[in-house]
Image (cartoon, rainbow, N blue to C red; front, side, top):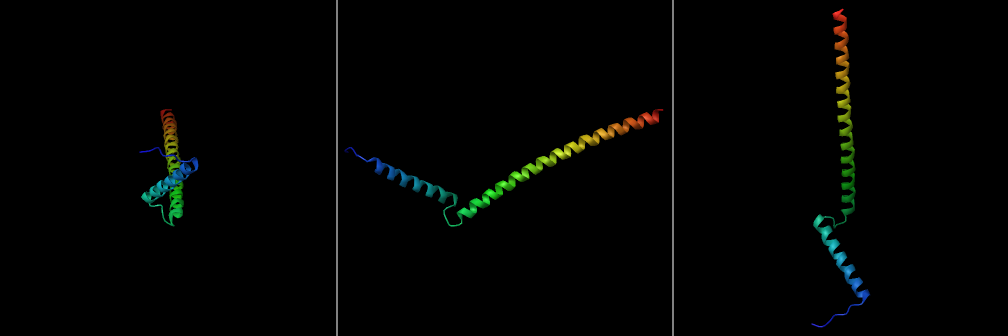
Length: 89
C-alpha cells in the first residue's frame, strides 16, 4: 500500500463527519433522535430538579423530627425533675 496524503482540511472534514455520525448513533441508542428529544431532555431536567427538591425536603423533615424529639426529651426530663422535687418536699 502506498502512502496516503490528506490535507488538513480533508482531515478536519473527515473528523467532523465521524463526530456527527458518532453523536447521532449515541442519541439513537438513548432514544433522543426524534423531534421530541428536546421535550424529553426538558422533562428529565424537571424530574431531576424535583428529585433534588424532594431530597432537601426529606432532610429538612428528618432534622425537624430529630430536633422535636430532643426537645421533647429535654422537656420530659425537666418535668420529671420538677415533679420529683415537688413531691419530695
